[in-house]
Image 1 (spheres, rainbow, N blue to C red):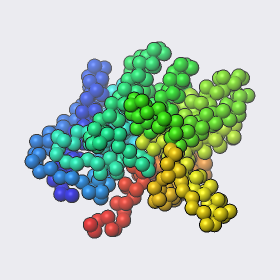
Image 2: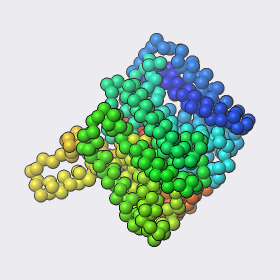
Image 3: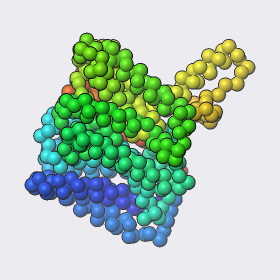
Image 4: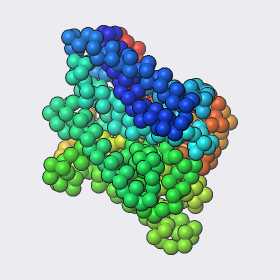
Length: 481
């Protein structure tokens, strides 16, 4: 890829991020937060200047991306966005440390929800809104938004979506990739608006409704309250957030098929059936486990289903300190940390479809022991999956475990206990947010030294970009082509 094209696309993308800062700037001005307004104005001005230059210079030289170009561009895009998004935190002085500011922003963009803030409510409303906005941008994918506007730059975008979209399958819901990106963003925006309306109907003001809808639909988990969603003590708010977290954890292409009247696609979808089975099964067994703490089954199920959806979809919201729940309930939540949302969703983790493939392949291997000459295939959605699917899934899960263990060792080197180290590694690589012990739902990541925060920031980016997009950059062969 020529450097000019690389710089044009990156500049254009950073300009979109700058435009996303404008509502936060407006809030700062309205609230009289002079210092914070300046902290937004500086990066906005710099990024928009670069973006305007990108749009108007070199438009007559369209170029398409190769696969390796897409991997490089997506990785650079998320890294640079992390630094640009961290600028308001640093310039305002509310998070003066570079490592802390980048960690907070990357956590938002990757929809992880891990925080270094000890007192979230001490932040100005404009910065709280920006934290939520980083979730909403990162949820559907900043790069997917860029692809929707690629005609302005005259460049092809499929390789970008291929490199950025989470999950082993990259479904096109429309013939053109730009049309697909626009449809997905329309669905995303519509569901977000609906959740805002329902939360406001439950008594929340526009600010808390919007920020929590951003975090729910992005499966992010940043809240404007120290006690997270538990602050509101509302069964209505819990129910709305639970519902929309589950919806956000589904493959977004299914919503389009539903809109087209293709109900059967949902009924036969192997991943969706497994996803809902895991959610309801986990909610039920946790509810039984915590029943003595809450007195009646309906209250226990309310808290259990909320936390199950929060961890399964990798959102990270909390309505209770689940670190104080019985060990069995915590073990189920730990299991959910390994699962994650569906492919093509805003959720992180290994993804349900990969685990479905592995379990189906395990069944095939047992059948092969009984029938050595038999031919067995992995079937998904009632159809035979492609032959290389199992190899791709096995490779991903192996790499996932390797990075998770390596990250755990880095965290443990700082003196953290084993449970903290393991759950911090899982919670960041899986884009979940809270873990157990020192990184539990009422704790934060501020106590870790900077080298651990940089490592966890890398883990969050790697997990959000499906590992390969980032790890492939470390292969010498990548740079020889």
